[in-house]
Length: 335
Image (cartoon, rainbow, N blue to C red; front, top):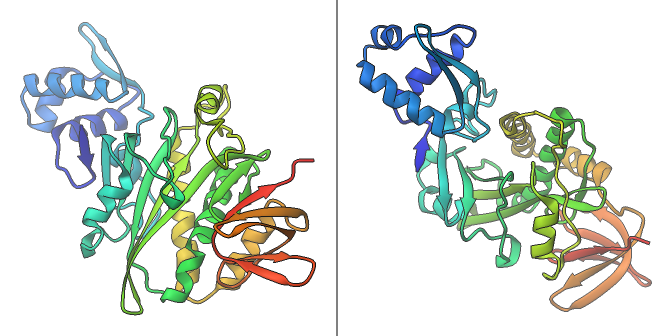
């Protein structure tokens, strides 16, 4: 099952009418007359709306009433009241897909897909950084964003940093939770991972044709179940879940705020304001001033974490020098 934000489907018309009249019962006859569709079509749409996670109450002689919205990140749930100018205005939704990154790569070169997001309830072949397998657990938010940037290639290395800052700010704004950023592409809470970021890019000469940001957020997941599955995988350092038991905040609020924060940060990159983004990242960075180890393709390197430079490279103070690391995994001491 898949939907897009540019589908003109009848069920959205029925649903929108319910959402704007959620305090009253609506008869099938009323819906049929107002929306100019048959009563059979009304009934079929209501049945489908229920399968999408919306709760609709029906009472004889009164009709139907919307009780609660869905938690699924359906296109019309994302685009409604979205405050961005470009990002998220075009949405592709899949109940199940191999990978949102793979689909994004198929359509990314199309100019009309600039700012489009691809959302999936389940990924069967999700992938993380360095082609590692990415688990898309139930209760997580998995999506990709296509960007046709105005900035040049020299700023592209700051995209994971820019994205991490935006997501950390949104988590604080919507859920009231302080998180940290872990180089190069993780968001952590209490030292455990709550989100990861992947960036794929296509370059032509010295220009960026497009960037695809792949983002996975542990919004409301079964931590014990996932830890049991991942605990023996390389570079695993624990996971956490953002939404707590009694919290009813819908995932769409976090996603929409993040899209807005990201668009604002990308605008700063367009204007060449790298320093501000780097300062925001450093303020949230886990392990600054502490001794860490970096796992690189050339072996482990230890030193004191200084921060990042203007290109997003990690600065590590060793005995003899300050090294710049462009690719690797940070291993933080928890002692």
